[in-house]
Image (cartoon, rainbow, N blue to C red):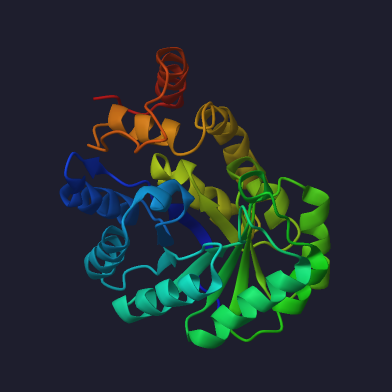
Length: 294
């Protein structure tokens, strides 16, 4: 039940004053597919689902499924800290035609490692779609251990892990314990090559919003034994990646997309537009990378 190999973009959402800007969303999707993106994630962290209504999230998933039309897999972010609500959202995403689910570990109320096993098992038993776990302790305050992931890898439709702990030692242990039983994806754009080197299958990427071809090529080159080519693209990307995290994601990447001519609007409160000083640094990096500003 592998979902994808390569680069999945964690798509940023274009907002208008009255809701989601679907014309811009269509343009973003077509840009991604034309540039070789291997899968598209909607309503992930970069997609600002925490400030979208239930109807908006459903509408974005439905629209994306219809627009993408099976050209690449559509992954829907349905995570939360209420297991019954996650089950409901996951069932709805399945009914809307999503190909897979990305489910973040519970945040704020958090849980124990046993609780994580129970949480994900309950969700997996309620749907038929493949599930990618998302481990991002910097946002959730909760880390999934390699031993817990190993237990969850035995559940038939838990097939992947987006690992964004930034702890390469932990990732290596996950790879060791779960070799051939779960697909590992980098959740940090600046650590793609290290994770591929221990058996990772790709990345779920923020940077791919603006440089989808290079993120795709970085993974493909490495997996096709062009180690040097993959490494060079990682090195090329890292200064731009650093600029994309000058402020909390997705503030900078939405600003970068606006600079490139995509009509993204502003983030929703409590997120705000990027500061003027950081916008200048971001703009310098975007131009230096060779991207066109409109």
